Image 1: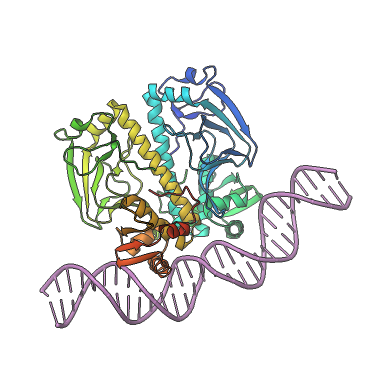
Image 2 (image 1 turned 60 degrees about the vertical axis):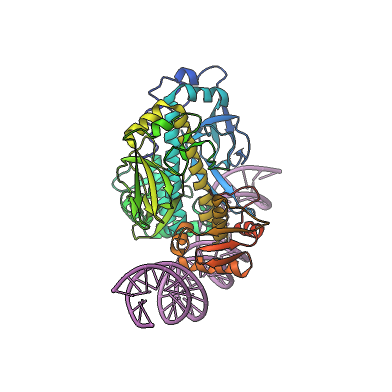
Length: 243
Length: 243
DNA sequence: AACAGTCCTTGATATAGATCAACCGTAATG
DNA sequence: CATTACGGTTGATCTATATCAAGGACTGTT
């Protein structure tokens, strides 16, 4: 529904499409201009950007998972965004971010220098429009997430999280079944959902006990009953989709 | 910090500035074009737009308070946005919204017909840029809010809420003191903060007992100690500003 | 003035999830 | 192979907040 990648640009060197750039405008040659583009990699756990840091580049996430998070004075933290392959990092017209960006797994970024990219945005209205769409997509995600954080039970949170992974992984779903790999530790999931890691563990095992899920190993699970999973999310039928 | 209204356009008939339109582009005459603009009013409690409804117009909120909210299958609801005077309703490039918009108090909207407005957006890049800024502002707000919903205690939530009202009301702050009026009932505040109305009541009275707040009547309170209020928010010194 | 209808407060109780603590399994390291 | 480290599980307990319940204070209406 959101995050449609069709129509996004695949430049000649990256294995992903650049969602920030719409295929209607023929910008491939611009993206591959000498001096425009570079790759950066980060190990799992590394901080990609600190809150308040000046942005020198914008980027597409090529590989891995990264997260945006905010922290309270005493150290409690909450994830406020999750970046998967083809997602965009950067804020048109701003040069500072209000949260930390951390590599959840090993991460590869395709970075564009800020100035030429902003020039690209200004001269090609389609790109600006595309960025607008991305921002609105993110806003919809953020609002579904607020409903989750404010009103859902632990079990509903977990079910919603797993359902989101199923949707986003786009692996084949066979007669109500789907296999999913968890890209993060229990601790990080807890951080994502406003829970503690113990509660995450308990709820996952409770869903397993109820026959909704089963595990291959800690990171790889099978949804045995997709409709039961959806039941458990608390969402009304058509909506409440994160990612 | 966000929501700077300076630089926004004041058209000749509205008592507010239209934040969606930047003062740099001289669009006043466009906004006042015949057939472009109309006013709508809603009584407190009325629904302005239902989730899924087609958007026929975009609008600036001229007077009153409106809220965006989402609902789970069993009726639990969570506010996901608050609209105050000069805020914008509408999504460039989309014709549907994913949440209900409800009048919290009596509300007056200044509505622009969708087609001519979108034409305005397309022909004047400054307006498009302005809308982008608004979307990013909203995103920052949503993310602060996620931190609040996911990790703050009831007391911290209430303190953050009151601090937000102080900031946004822009009334004079005298030696650490400020007076604020609550634009909503305890129930609506609860909905805003992911709490129950009883907890809201208890926490407000607890802050009163501790000398941080005092009440004139139910809707009008005085912050007796702004720095104590900030202490109670749990935010680290510079950040965590909602609105 | 009496009434009804909201909204708010306050108390008693229940409970979901946090916290504290011990232990287990797997993978990396010397 | 033993050791360590890390992530995960499971149990016992605690506590913040929800829930249930009753009553009080405004506001508007007849």
